[in-house]
Image 1 (tube, chains in turn orange, blue):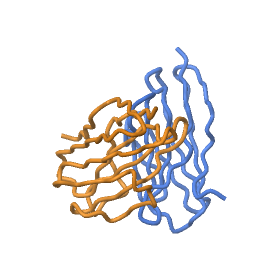
Image 2 (cartoon, rainbow over the protein chains, first blue to last red):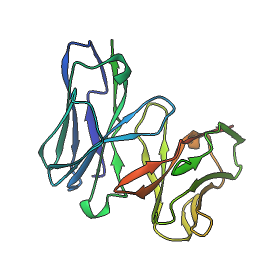
Image 3 (cartoon, rainbow over the protein chains, first blue to last red):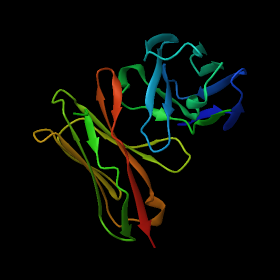
Length: 113
Length: 109
C-alpha cells in the first residue's frame, strides 16, 4: 500500500470555527509532514514529525496545531484562521532515513470565509 | 538568488513530442534530486528520484543530473495528453525539500 489518505477533501470554515484535518498512511513510515500550497505555487513545509515527535516547525502561527497520535495518523487542528490561510493542505510521509523521498496525499482544499 | 530555479512555463507541445523540463540550483552540497508530477487539484506524485550525476530512466521518463553545472532535467518521450500536469523539481537540502516553482505542461492531441 503506497497511499497517503487525507480527509476531508474540501472544508469551508468561518474565522471563529475549530476544525481538524486528518492524514493516514499504512506504509510503515515514521516521518510525516504537513505542507501548505497556494495556487500556482510549490508546497511550503509547515511541520515535520519523526517517530511521532515534532521535529520541525517552520515558524507556523499558533492557530495551526499539529498532532501525531500514532505512527499512522497525523492531524492538523485549525482555530481562528484567516482568509489568507485558504489553501491546499498536503500531508506527506517518508521513511525517517529517507526523508528526501516523500509521498504526498491528495490534500484538503480549505476555504476560510 | 533562489535555491532552486524552474521556468514556470506554461509549456505546450503536440502529442508525441519529446519534452524537456529543467531546473537549476545554487548549492553544490545538494545531493538528492526529485521530480514530482501534480495534476490539477491533486497532491504531488513522486515521479523519479536520483542521487547522483548521470541519467536515470523509467519508461518514457528520463531524469538527468549534471552536478558540475548544478542543472537537472526531466525528459518525457512520446508525450501523451495524460502527461498534462505541473512538474515540480525538488532538491533535498537543509533537512527539507526545496521545490522549484513548477512548470505547467500541456500536451495537445
